[in-house]
Length: 354
Image (tube, rainbow, N blue to C red; front, side):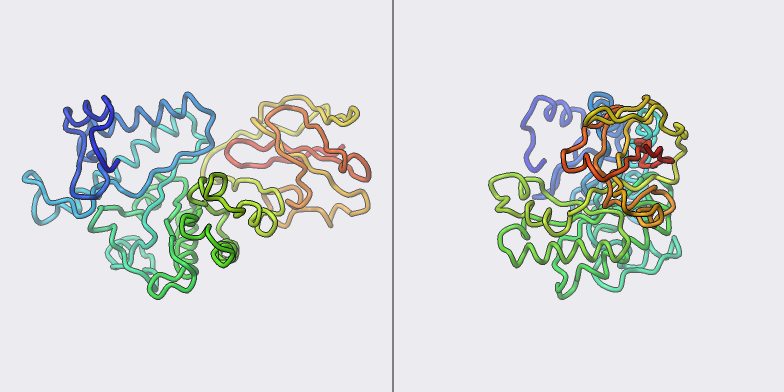
């Protein structure tokens, strides 16, 4: 929040000494205050329990920008201590998610450049990015490499809010660095794109499409588009349709979190087609992916080119959370069908072919 207090909850938080505020920087809960951190954990737990969400993401501010050193902070290492408290906060939320609903993906959207000053990268034997300047390490006291190294995030979504021809922070080398770094720690990177500045004109749309292509060349498993108002609200102006007709022509599955243990639910049984409806026995997978495979194509022509998938994404008819699926009219003739368990961790298990 930029202005406090605005609600009774804000007033209570201020009275309890949980809030840090400095200048125009957003107000944040104090990472060094155990009660404030526990409150953040409790709120996140409440969200996860109440709603069937797939993921949770934190924005990049854990300390106000250039928050002055406090009297109880040692002059020679207060930055180190602040990063320690931020790391503990991230770890506490991650531990709660793992205990409550371990399939929910927890991550942070840090500033777009990390490790640029060499301090963080040296600790983890990672090369710093070749472009950009890391301001968050010493100004808002964030060290995303620490979270990746400690395994306390499932993904990072760096805010790469610059065009591909930016003079100091060009998009492509930063996207490549983040994806390579996340894979080094066996985690995912979903680059965040700013639609606020790239939704107004066709030229901006082309730039957005170019950036998504860069993500794919870097082998990122997906992209985050910020914010939804530029896709569905009054400011949308057709960007969603433009992307859908060019960048998102086929369905996609979330990447599996291979670092988490998931039980194999077993193959689908009782698969039948009754009119337009595929049905099968529920095996508690949580959800299922349905394929429509052209009858004229051989098995090797439709098989996936990735070891953790059954068939090519082009043949996904849909994803369902129920043990049934209504086929659209255009898929009723000339196809054979397959259904695979697709668990909440992103794992697709062996398919059953009808």
